[in-house]
View 1: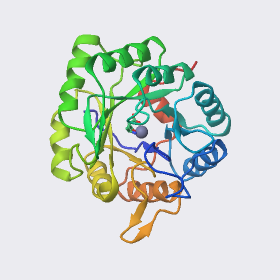
View 2: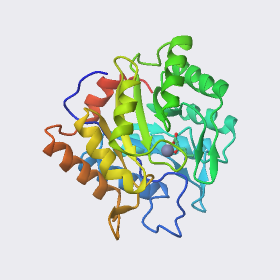
View 3: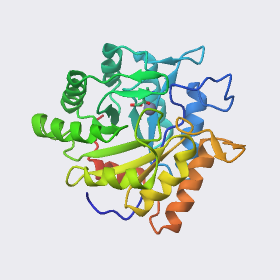
Length: 278
Ligand code: KMH
Ligand code: ZN
């Protein structure tokens, strides 16, 4: 694992699981998403992990909307734009692969199947290989999403059998505390570090109440951070998140206290070798 000083802060503002009716401040329209992205960039985010919604605020992988979203985020922010290929647990593989046609800077690539609350988030081996292959063809930098420790073993297999990703740098995101996946605690984060590919960088996010312990553990371990309403809508015990920027601002503050200030989007492009042309 490469040592690092500055901190990459990714915001995951929306996700696919929460309903707007239950969380009225969830950004679901393009205008809301762009406004959130600008606010989050202002307070320290350098990358955005994007799930989009349709006119009824339901999760969608509609290619036209995805292209419009990538264009709007590029026009209004400097953030590194990462599209989710995970989508919602109900999304078919063809739709998830088609996300890459929107040509983001980066896309998520989940490294295996995992129980996901009462659902199953399905990621067959052949599907993972196809995502990895198509991203390399299109010069899209993957972020390998790790929900369980076995997914890191699958990542080693992927890199051994199919080679390095676009850009040649391996970046991993530990998604911790999902019911059915690995716990969001220090011991599990340390266990994950032992399984990390040589030279890889990692970020970590803790779902729900694991958000802060995972954030602090990742900072101390030299890792990067992902925060946002995709992963938690609780700011503190009994206090709902006001908006995504509130979570990014807290991450920035803690990163600065840890002497690991936020990275600029330009530095993240260099770190991840994001293609200029996408
Ligand atoms: N919504 C989850 C089923 C990703 O974005 O790549 C999958 C997810 C992972 O959020
Ligand atoms: Zn996601």
